[in-house]
Image 1: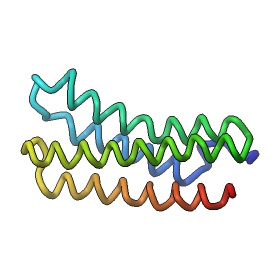
Image 2 (image 1 turned 90 degrees about the vertical axis):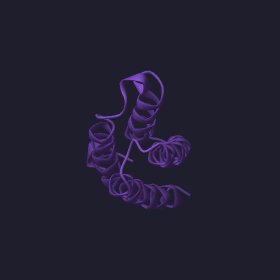
Image 3 (image 1 turned 90 degrees about the horizontal axis):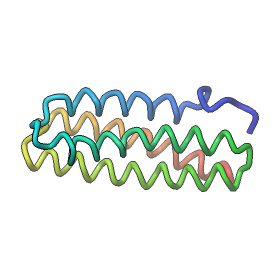
Image 4 (image 1 turned 180 degrees about the vertical axis):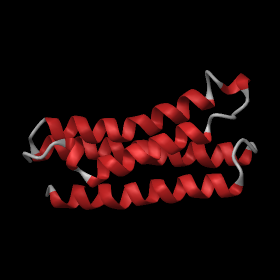
Length: 117
């Protein structure tokens, strides 16, 4: 548990995902700025934030708790990506790219959860 959160591949990949979400939402309609744009960005930033916070507690049960929150944020994010696609705010290709990144972060996060048992 002594590693820095910045050393965790899950955190690094989650940061890549958050960055991609920010780029992908840049051209959302202006009327969505305080609704879907904000919500999807919050969900995306919640993932690496929860991983970092959990690691900083230096306790396996606490880390697992925050990893589960990160996993919940990933499900929220995926839902919002799918909604953005349905609303034609994202192309199929852009949505699939974000979903693929989210899936990768999810697999890594699940592995971390398993390793804390």
